Figure 1 (cartoon, helix red, strand yellow):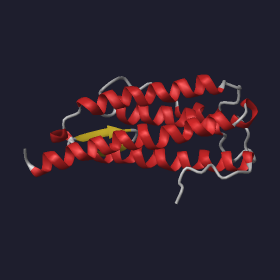
Figure 2 (cartoon, one colour; figure 1 turned 90 degrees about the vertical axis):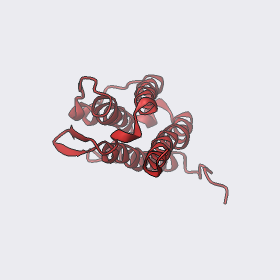
Figure 3 (cartoon, one colour; figure 1 turned 120 degrees about the horizontal axis):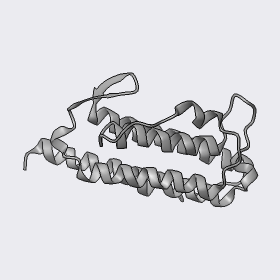
Figure 4 (cartoon, rainbow, N blue to C red; figure 1 turned 135 degrees about the vertical axis):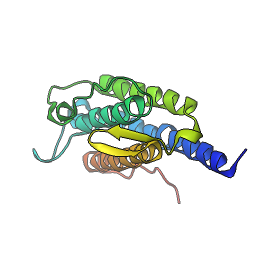
Amino acid sequence: MSTEKQVGEVFLLQARQHVREEFLPKIQDCLSKLTEEDIWWRGDETNNSVGNLLLHLAGNVRQWIVSGIGGEKDIRERASEFSERRPLSKEELWRKLEDAVADADRVLARFSPEHLLDSRHIQEYDLTALQAIFHVVEHFSYHTGQIIYITKLKRKTDLKFYDL
């Protein structure tokens, strides 16, 4: 096996593991600590609620991985991820995110590392599959941090994700 293929396989595995095993468990832990009301709390109208962030993450993963990499039809309605104000339950929000991640994980599990440099057009961007996957992992990390921060604000406690 070539070094390039090995690096590609490690990249794909690490991308999948970060989302599934690093970010999702932290989000799930935050949800367990937040009330239904907390999920839709926002500091002001310019801020996103945890509920909006969960919808946004699910939409982003579906658009960039399931559609952009996996080839399924892009049905994302990005603006509604941020404008949603009806109180979807924590369970419904979690299910949407978990399902999107599971679908993306299946796409990446069968994705060949030889195609990481293939061109993709996602949203208005022309980029490689590698760039799209990297974007999703980075984006997921960013919003996971926001969810953690909101949880810390609402619960006034250290979540102790790292015991250093």
